[in-house]
Image (tube, rainbow, N blue to C red; front, side, top):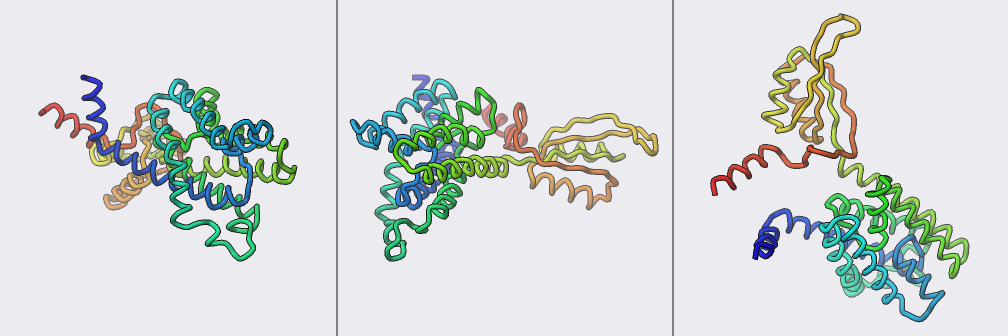
Length: 314
C-alpha cells in the first residue's frame, strides 16, 4: 500500500512529467539521427546497433533486431543494479521508445524523400553523414545524462565506466564505443572502420562539450569592504550559500574578507548588477565550473523552504 502511494506521489509531481517530456524529445532527436544519417550511410559507429550488425555478420543465427534486444536487456539489468534504480527505469523507457520513434520519422518523412536523385544517403557523403549524426546524437545524450537518463545501449556502459572509474562522460562514451568499432573489422573495410572510430572519438568530445555547457556554473570570488552587504544579497536574494575567508592585501597590507560562491549565469548577472547599482567597490574574479557535487542544488533554496513550509502546514 505504501509503495502504491509513493508511486502515485511521484506520478503527480511536476519533475516527473518535465523529465518525461525531456526524455521523449531527447529520444526523438536520437531517433532522427539514427534514421536519417546512420541507417542510410551504413556507418558502424560505436553503438549497440553497430555491434549487433557485426554479430549478425559473424553469427547469422539471429536477426539484427534480436541481437539488439538481447544486448539491451542485459545492459538494462546492469544499469538497474550498477548505476541506480532511477537511471535503470528511465533508460528502460528511452530504450523502448527508440524503435517506435525511428518508425515515426520513417512515416512522417522517409529519408529517401529528402535525398538528391541517385544519392545513397541523406548527405551523400559518409563524412557529412557522420558529422550530422554525431552532433544530433551528442546533444541528445548530454540532455539525457543531465537528468540521470540515457539513450540506452552503449550509453549504459559509458555511465558505468563514468561512475566506477570516474572518467569524464565523453571519455567513457569514446572508450566503450572504440571497442565496439574495432569489431567492425570483421565485416567492413578498414576505411569505414576508421570513419567509425573517428566518429566515436568526436562523439565523446561533443558530449563533453554539451554536458559542460548544460552544467556550467560560475565560481565567484569577491574582495570588498562591503562584504556583509554582498553576503546578505547572496543569501537572501539569490538564495545561495557562500564561504568567507580572511585575506590580507599584498600591496596595502589591509585585512579584509573574500567571499566565494557558486552561482548560475543568471544569478551571477544579478549579483554584478546589484554591486553596480549600489556603487559597491569590489575586486571580483569568476571562472566556469562544469561539475558540482554535494550540497549545491540546481533549485532555489527559497523555493525548497517554501515547499517544506507548505508540507508542514498540511
